[in-house]
Length: 539
Image (cartoon, rainbow, N blue to C red; front, side, top):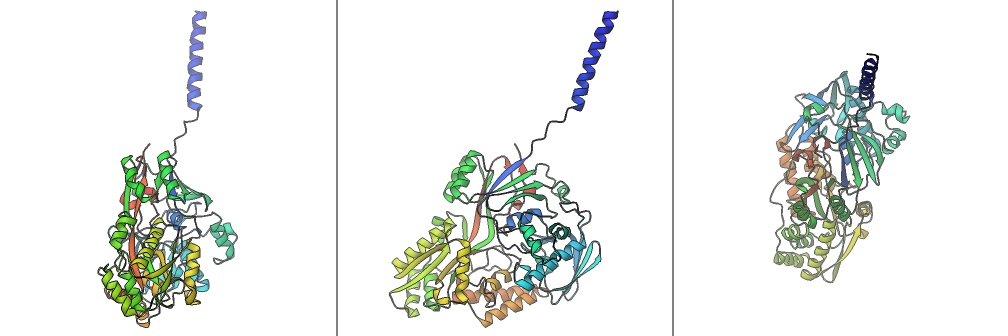
């Protein structure tokens, strides 16, 4: 009996020890869903009020705006604002804010954050011209009615619901950034430096955890994001790595090796091959377009008939087929397809006979030589420039000097048109994507005589200026009339051949079969932004 008791006690001891082991043993770590997205450019900054370039690829994930534009329906939807009202004269807007929203540092979202964020973007633009805070320029006063209600009083009517969904300068950040950065006021340089050093406090689905603008950015899922219950996506990535991969061929090889899960810019020629290998391909019609500007202040491109000769000598159908390999849509004017205010019928017929007739009418005598400035970072602009040179030299007898540059140098050279037009190239090829959902974003920015930062044509036309100004003022009270005036302004650009809309970008994303990405996850606004909260990762 004594021996039996000892055995039983020993067995019980083993059971107890085993149970204790499994009870106290830490649970096996859950495997994180990690995806790597290859992006084709370095990041220019991540200040939510001042950034106006490639930082958008991060800002749209970390921060949120008051409203959101649903491009699939063309409607404005709630985001940080759940609803809003506007006065009959369009000069007072009241936004009712979403409750229970937290910033990434745990600070509650409220009306104070909205007031601070809008005023900083607006005043930075007013005082320094930096950023794109012109979208708030009509805002004279922001009144906090209560913790979750703000009233914006405007100097003139505007579609503030559209402006609040802008891709730049509309993001809401936490008031806690003032103390974190040591800034004494919201225009303090220390706050900008703090943001651009890799700091961010937004309300978005992902929070920034690592920032190297030249190499890699890491984002982690924000579990307390208010929107998870609405997107209902438990398979969303836990970690998003945005890797800077400038070379398209390296993006291609990274997909094949499994080091990259999503690529935005593999060589077009390789896209069908990757599809055959089991990768998924999504072709996204974007609001990014490519435009060929004529220097209207320098001979011979200051002659309208000479510009029309070049416009009619370009076979854009062949360009899209042979250069873009079908990943593009021939542009009709300078506002892209699907964007508010786009109109058809602004395409120059490819006809060499017409081109030669215009060249003769221009009175430009040969020999004549022009300079073409274009961005060397894009395979499509490089090939297009070479094709343009061949056509103009062989068919029209116009000698062409090519000037390939990186984006920053191209921009600086092009801006010189206002101070030294005679040394600025005759033709400048550049791309554009919008800030706000209005034709004003394209037409004012690229062609109004006061827009000397981006008017690469050096174009000055009082009638055109007046149309744009009046249309912008009308948007808040008579939207349809404003669209008619924008259409009239576009026809002036077309008839004067100030610039040629070349193609609207169709972006082929290539990604791993382990991912499920719905169409609405791709943004047409800026062709490289992906809403990762909608992506499903399946191992």
